[in-house]
Image (cartoon, rainbow over all chains, first blue to last red; front, side, top):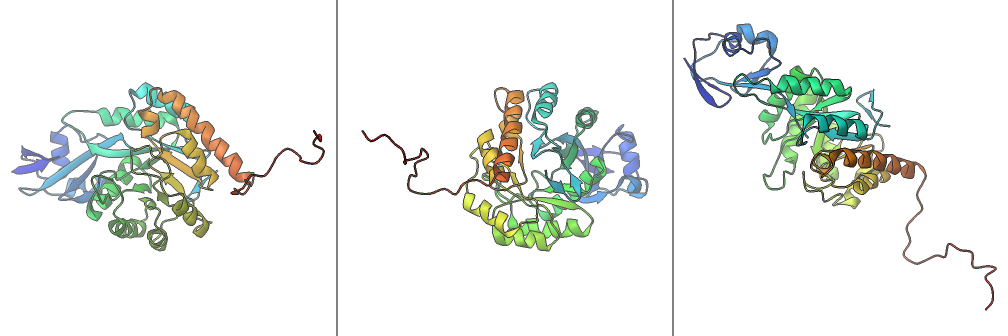
Length: 65
Length: 256
């Protein structure tokens, strides 16, 4: 399956958003997520199934004004 | 001192966390500024990078309230989704709502701003809208649930100060019970003092401190300025007048 993660194409077998984060080593990281521009809370990641072409954003705290 | 959504803040200075020469200088600048609120953002993190965790630890160590922003968002959907991600990351209902309307001036999109503020307020957020000093826009923002207004002084990062003092005064007069913050455009402490003298509850700035040659000294300058402004505002300033009026008594002057 091909996903777009933070703007970059990624080939993966991850079935859920939780699987994807685990695969990326971010399962326990302080990050927030969205799929196709819709927020997915941390608690919903294990049940959020992914489809080919999904656009995923993974964000972390950063400096801001 | 200001109260935002029921939370008392012990400073009239709100300070951004971006563009400092180093994390250590950021921390020193915050200490000298005595700011009670730090603005932060959410951004993508590349690969195995963990910079976000380190930054979050630094902010927690400052011991200040955190106000996440939706900087860089140009649409309502983008801003709302960013706010939702920020709420989970920073564990706060506070959101500095930016819906940018123009790439050159970074001025707010007033139409998108009201729509996003309505959606977020409905969803339990406590919205700090980055807005212009337009009275009608601000009335709409209050109507949809905003209990803080943050009009710009000048475009973000310009350091031009208070571009429309009449407009800022008008907002103060029309919203006596809504906390008002001048957000963006300040360059030097005298401009911050002026905003507080106008009766504003606080100022929010970032570039003026972070990009100063000595950010730590500039942070202290802003801390003193907002304190001076608050003393002046509470001291009932004299009315300006067009013609001179002697301050030294005329009566008793030697007849020479």
